[in-house]
Length: 155
Image (cartoon, rainbow, N blue to C red; front, side):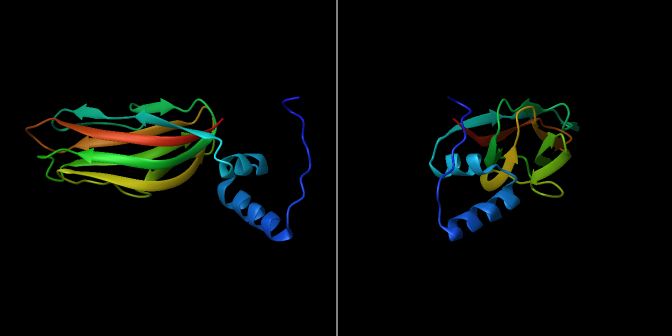
């Protein structure tokens, strides 16, 4: 039966570690064990955009809806040559408990000619939205900013 629950014996130290992880992550014991066993699948969400000069995208204009529970584990941002730190980006999650910025946790990132990978550990739930805000302050050129967010989903 798929929803049958069982009890398994574990050492007290293991139980305490699971309780600490549960508090820290908001995940269930079942989800923590599944994660620990490696029973998950990586999904990448692409929020990349070409942004015309002196324009931008608000968080509610650039998003992807999460289709199952999981954990955001990585955010990759690509700023092409010529951005000259004139294009500002931030990535967050909009869910039942509000909007939370995760990369960076405050303010924006603005770089030039680089790809940056950020390790993140942020639980998400089915129906949450991964969002990105991008503002191009360049008065002459459009820029295509790459934004890839990796979510580990439990299988």
